[in-house]
Image (cartoon, rainbow, N blue to C red; front, side, top):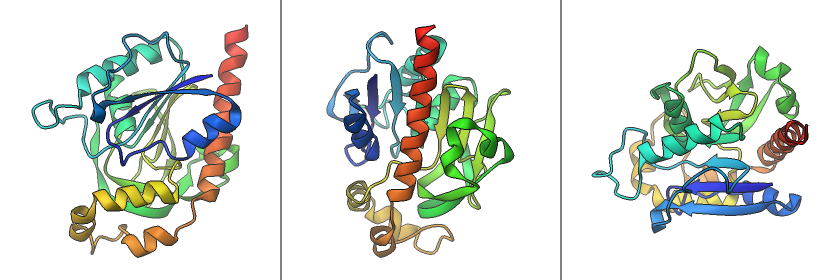
Amino acid sequence: MRVHFIMHEAFEAPGAYVRWVAERGHAASYSRVFAGDRLPGDVDGFDLLVVLGGPQSPATTRAECPHFDSVAEQALIAAAVASGKPVIGICLGAQLLGEALGAPFAHSPEKEIGTFPIVMTEAGRRHPLFAGFGAGLDVGHWHGDMPGLTPDAVVLATSQGCPRQIIAYSDRVFGFQCHLEFTPKEIEGLIAASSDELAEARNRKFVQQPEALRTNSYDEMNAALFGFLDGLVAAYERRTVR
């Protein structure tokens, strides 16, 4: 399995995805757009596309952030979806995924930073790829927006602060507003890059400060992520072989 990551900033890293790729013997490639990497010219060079988060929004222009091309990323995402490849969007990536499918992003009711529980909807509890999530679990968050919903989209998980935490756009296309890939290393990078944001949001209901962020456990959410990814890859490979 060839996994391609689109990274928008150095501090928005793939985290636990990298360990999953290594442990499963998959191959990883990257478009580190913050460092000047180009996006893939087509979808033939990867099997799974993972679009990571970032401080931008789908509405951010090239003038505002020269290294971020929202239109080009949406075109690549749409091409990957149309080709039948599995696609995962995380945070900003989930919002870009929704936009690529014609569903505009929106502001979340609450800003969420830290580890807070998500609750699986009835559809989420029934979904075979999310069997390891149970009725819900504590996961990472770092956002103020949320993905749009297409007519066929199914919300699989919600939280107190955001009604769109995990979305199934199809049986192989998923948007995660939450961050199951967080590890202590990734959290340190985000803390270092977000001192002003954390200070400004200090009194928000669903915002943790660095001392709490550093004491959170990320093992359970990483394990749930691995179970989802294993199931997604297995389902994709079964269909590809036929």
